[in-house]
Amino acid sequence: MDSLKEIAKYVMSAADSIGLDKKASYGLRLAIDEIATNIIVHGYEESQIEGVIKIFADINETTLTITLEDSGIPYDPTSKAPQEDLDVPIEQRQIGGLGVYLALQNVDAFRYKRTEMSNVNIFVMNRPVKED
Image (cartoon, rainbow, N blue to C red; front, side, top):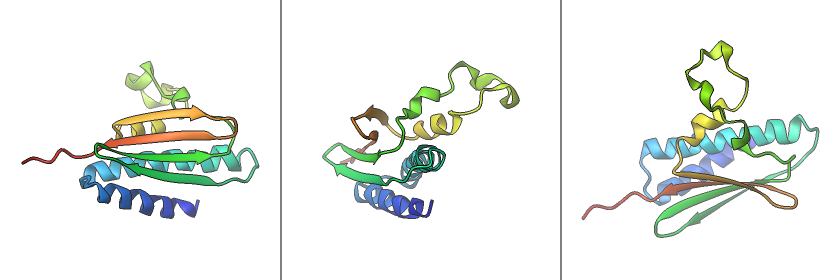
């Protein structure tokens, strides 16, 4: 869990480098923090395995893409996202998925893929439009 601070610093630095405002930067950080926490807790600790989280940033003319890659158990974060039960009182909802769902609402795009040995979580933020 100590690595979450370093991940957050990396994300905020990347967000700052493309000029994301505070709200968008915080939303990106929140989304990545939620997924990274789930990787640590569910992918490693609960599974009683050790592993690392690799983080990469790709910046181009239109987007910032942050990728988290881990070797934990296969897990697609969108597989438990709540659907119809968002209007149901919290005590009547199924457990799981709400934090991920809410966090991913803060990014412009999110994709998950599984490679032979890794979970790959991809977060995309559009660059702010510069007005002339």
